[in-house]
Length: 415
Image (cartoon, helix red, strand yellow):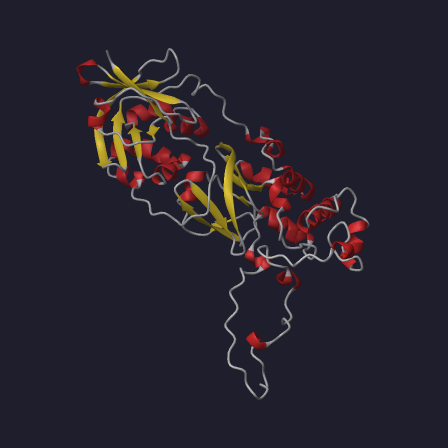
């Protein structure tokens, strides 16, 4: 009897991330293969599909590589999105060297794209195939290429592993992708409405063909306490915030996890940095940090992530506040030029810089002194919250009300 085992595939969808420090990566698959010309085509497609980043972000992994002749049969006339799925079938989430392949015991592990069947055949051969019922073992182990024990193993196989329908699947048409429908289904209806009313959706759509990554705040993110009041922002600044939630490049989770330099957003000079450990990815703006909580779609050239808080660029909201310095000794004589630390009232600053920190909120006034929107009854903000707000819910946070109102103004202006 042949001993077989089902192994999990490399998942393209990764969820549940948390704020952790940047890990150190102990291998680089493209560098490992760069000295072997016979794998140049396979290595090139690892980079083009950005699967190399996903492989490099893993602590323990096995890559089944194809020589140029075998890779040519896969590359052919297939679009990049299809090739990426086919290559994903060749990445196993565990360490397997030649000896372990021959010592396989029965068992299985789940994967997001399907399963690979690895069978120890008679005569010392090892066969590979899709685990779908009726699939053939259409590939076999050829040789060991390179190993870093218990970290990464690179093994050559004779042919691609063909899951049913994988090569016949139509490539996604970027013009047919309904970004707002995807966002709404993922629980990001407010963000979808804002990018539509502000005209930013058109900017997103124009970027898709060359690669687009979107970080969409969930509806709950717009209801978070302590968000800054954006009522002093101009229409252009609101559009900038929405552009700040996207990258003009296809940047899947593996690429995010291996990013070391600041990432340029569609907002131009406004950048993001990434901290990551394991499967945890967090975006940092200099003002706040937002956890990547899920993947809505990852289909070359488009990827949309959900995030759990709104990204606030430091260029608009200033840096995170530093702890106040300890008070110095009190002088008996007044200083002719008080230092900034001793000044009791803030110095003049641009209006946007005076927005409250997203991490702290002012203590609420007594209920009798507040309007339904939360502003004192005799304040200008209270008047604004009860007049001219259209369909905006006056109970919503200031950020949501401001974004909806300003976005509507931008749309009206553009018409």
